[in-house]
Amino acid sequence: MTKRGILLGAAAGVAALVALAVACAPSAPRGGARGSVAVSDLAVAAQKTYVAPGDLDEYYMFASGGHSGQVYVYGIPSMRHISTIPVYTPYPATGYGFDDESKAMLGGLTWGDVHHPSLSETNGDYDGRWLFVNDMNGRVARVDLRDFKTKQIFGPVANVSGNHAASFVTPNTEYSMMASRFSIPIPKGTVVPIEKYATDYKGVLAAIKIDAKTGAMSLGWQIVMPPFDYDLGDAGKGASDGWMFWSSYNAERATGNLETTASQRDRDYIAAVDWRAAEKAAAAGQGDLIGGVKVLDPKKVPGLVYLMPCGKSPHGVDVSPDGKYIIGSGKLQGVTTAFNFEKLQTAIRNKDFSGEEDGIPVVKYESIKDAEVPVGLGPLHTQFGTDGWAYTSLFVDSAIAKWKLGTWEVVDKVPMSYSIGHLAAAEGDTVSPDGNWLVGLNKLSHGRHLSVGPSQPESSQLVDITEEKMKLLYDAFTEPEPHYAQIVKADKIKTIEVYPREENKHPLAVWDIKDAGVSRQGGKVIEKVVAVRSTLTPTAIEVNEGETVTVAITNIENTTDELHGLGLLDYNVNVVVDPGETKTFTFKADKPGVFPYYCTNFCSALHQEMQGYLIVKKKG
Ligand code: RUQ
Ligand code: CUA
View 1 (spheres, rainbow, N blue to C red):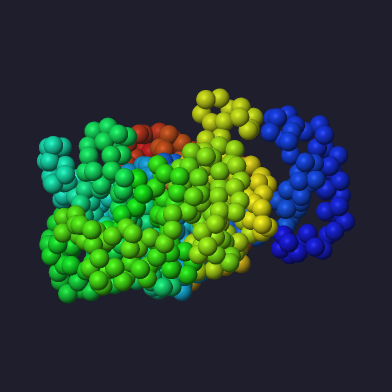
View 2 (cartoon, protein in one colour; view 1 turned 45 degrees about the horizontal axis):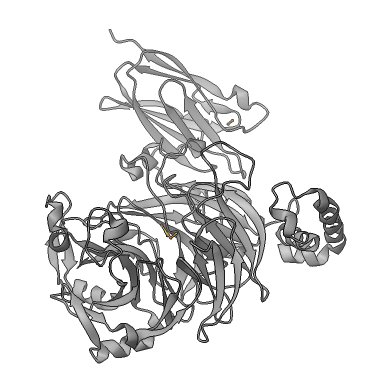
């Protein structure tokens, strides 16, 4: 039963809960913040966010974990942390980054900085297949939502430096887009003095092609750009399908103390890219070979890129659900600007330009702007609800503003407890947002939780947007650092809990304990291990000092949640295999002795007995 179903069906339970909340409230205002909140409001908030034992949340929220390198999965509306998906950083809890397969994917980097999760889309709607996430180290990863596992890390991509403005997908997941935040001389490895920044450093916009069947990523095309700092992006949809928008700061092309040097001009730019034209130009073989890949130059291939002037140092750029408006937020302003896509097309057709930057036409601001919406100070990001409602996060004001597309009136504001960065609405980046939940992803949280010392948690706050007035319902303390999140209806995600045996094509998989054991091939030891309650077979592995050992472990269980692990002491080995899965790990047996290994995941009454010995025999 859904959360809402439960609420309707179990009226008696709700009444009891409300009574409880009312009874508790008078003694509650410990933190002081509650003092002004009416008891009835607390009761309603409790009722709306309460998910009873055994009941399920309505939505998944996938939140970026910033420089933790991971993605965190929360349930909405409970805000409960359900799972961690390791992406760019080893995660001992699932053995990620310890087995040969995930180690190879990480490629020697043991950290990543994840900013923008992007769910795959079909016709502009989340389709529940994959989640793409960027890393500042020029990479994008694909998480399969069938098993919530990272399946591919693409990159570091040539020429792209500081991949912040990523991993936004196009409405049919044709591409995941990326861009340089830190312009550098390209190709990477070139050294040019910083004094030549304005002319010799370059930004790069890039599209990663996504295979429609498998989700496999490959490089689509790249465009070389002036040395601005490309910051955020959003793909056009509906009316603007086929276009991509990237915000940037530092139109000054400044270096040094950017806080001042890059805040001189009144306007920076949003780059509007006709990605179908870029696709065509790349397919026709246009572009210059830089860093081993073809890079399109807008000077030589006109019609690819236009620059839209936008209020001082824009951060977020967000396309409305119908694709008609592009909302650009100058973070040093008190307004957010709504650009009209149709006007942009007209201006391009009429060459209604106010200048150019490195051969890229700058479109006249007045010709493409529909409104400057007085949302409040420090607007960063905009999300959408139903009926043209828009919600803009205000970092400086520490609030969310609610306003209407088309009429541009600001109708409500709700204070966030600490400076809000991104915000995420239920199905908020799709062509049809749900308009019920909104989560503010705050940058600071101090003071609203039990103290944990100087290293404070991050906070996220759940807001109810079903009524005219927004209502703050709930505080949660989220894993660092939630830059952005996407919220998808739970029933769109179809998971498996056991890997079907016929899908396991691992060459070293074994399904019967009689096939487990050692073989030697060209000086290498291959050990096939079977994991099933409650034995790791074989229970002893004998190798010679100096040999390279590859252990392939197959979990032959086909029961939900029957995971087994193999922790090998003193050799830094820790793998976990899910039911039906095979993983390998390789190590050099360079320490003689007897080393216990054991199952790390509690799996049965005799889990403790699931153990064995690696015997490394001394040379000579
Ligand atoms: S950012 S607070 Cu890394 Cu998306 Cu806007
Ligand atoms: Cu297998 Cu514990």
